[in-house]
Image 1 (cartoon, helix red, strand yellow):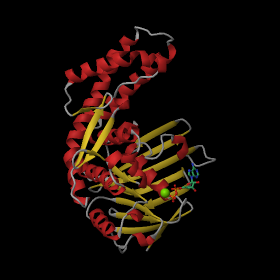
Image 2: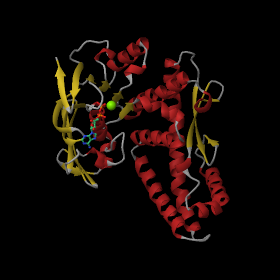
Image 3: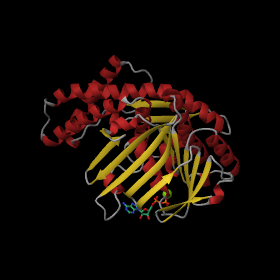
Image 4: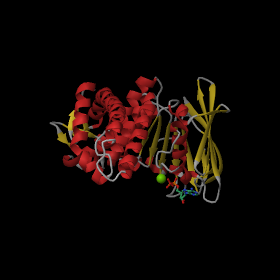
Length: 369
Ligand SMILES: Nc1ncnc2c1ncn2[C@@H]1O[C@H](COP(=O)(O)OP(=O)(O)O)[C@@H](O)[C@H]1O
Ligand SMILES: [Mg+2]
């Protein structure tokens, strides 16, 4: 499945744009703040139903306008699939081939993997980023996970609201606990299963790009720092109950749920179980971050039986020439790709049927021939 045409109206700094894409590589270059990332953001919106860089949809609407409109025409074996998204203040509507659909319906259509310079934060940053990473790819691998997570999230919000409203320790919390544990365990078990499934893909990707051929390993950390590898419902339920009992008093004091998948983490180690977040060199961390993403491309290809669209935002300048060539040849041989860069010279390749260059200047896109 390829994105063949994109139309934007009042989206970010694009007033009115229609642009056709190559099924191969689409390269956007131009100075800073011209609208390169905004274009990739529009593509992510069409694939995921949400932006890859903000949760606030209203930011997407062009300043001074009331609504933004995005239309994408996807092509698969000659068949067209038109996705339309309208974003107004506080609301977002989706259409597929003219019929209104839910955002979740889009999510499972076209997988997408994006790369950005701050991917390094996946390794160095806080647990929230790693949870978001897991959740995003889990939902792309298994659309049912979105529903599982959403159910859990609703209960978490209600439980937190309850903790905020009551003044004293209150037995009624136990009523919430049962539902909370049920929903939370589903999230935890899905995440563990995903990690076990993606491990070999990420290991293989890491072996290919790491200079020392170090082994990369992933583990799910739950309830503080228990490493959990098996989705054993009974054991986990007991652990969950014990942990909730342990922090109960503190939860009432802090008026916040302190245990559950909303606080879990992904531990990334290399070689002999060295925690790469604290002890890895910058180079090792960069390589691991890239391996996480490359591994996701491979597993999405296998599971979804469709190569994901790739979005690479400003990452070319970070690579030395050898790695750049290796990455470009990988991209040329795989899926439809959208890349941005400030310099045309970051791409030591020629334009061709499959490689198209565009210059981006102040919300206008000029096709280079
Ligand atoms: N909602 C918006 N309305 C109008 N312009 C916006 C909006 N959001 C961002 N911009 C503008 O978009 C430009 C940044 O676009 P971006 O795609 O991030 O640039 P770059 O080419 O550096 O990737 C800036 O000029 C910014 O002011
Ligand atoms: Mg940018």
